[in-house]
Length: 115
Image (cartoon, rainbow, N blue to C red; front, side, top):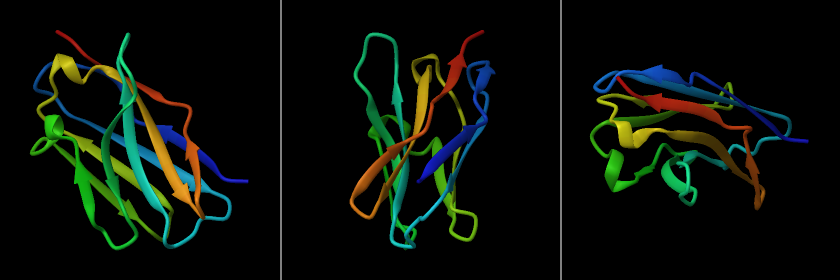
């Protein structure tokens, strides 16, 4: 059974930074894809960023240049460094793992950007 445990959310002022972490446990393929999605109140869940096992990344246009995704393969952990945060980044952020054709989700961590 694969489990995802997220950490690092919180309240930050506009222009501030946060770092999210997500650790996967269980049988995780070295070819898995890990990433982050977010869901703001009243909106659909959207892709923020993903990274594959080779380090190739993809970002939503709204976060390019501000967010950086990285991955530690040995720890099965994915990180999201979020800089220059804006109020519109406020959402619940969900870790995602695509593993052996199955998709897994973390429990979500709240990120609030407000003065």
